[in-house]
Image (cartoon, rainbow, N blue to C red; front, side):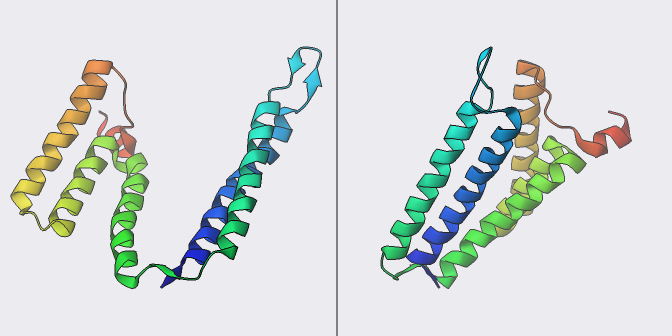
Length: 155
């Protein structure tokens, strides 16, 4: 379904876009020398140029490679089945907070992707969410995002 050439080109385009964004943003911070020394954007600018150059190299190298199929339709569906719930999870964090979103993510993935019983999946999800709270909020005293739900419930 997807050739090596297509995957290499896509990956190079994505990393190249990040490199270009770094270069553009670094120019806003200033590149070169000032009376205080090297401007703050110089190192990120150079790093962005290296990322862009590496992306161009990978794109050319991938384009010259064979056209063999790297990802079949079945493998692609498996990847999407893992990727889409993760995207929804990240989108839910600002709304529900890290703990509730993590519990829901684990519940859904364990129940439907691993065919685990609802009770067992719920137990694992709750234990993991409580574990996140104990480790981060209680032990390290680092608050993870509580989301709009906590603000609405005044927690």
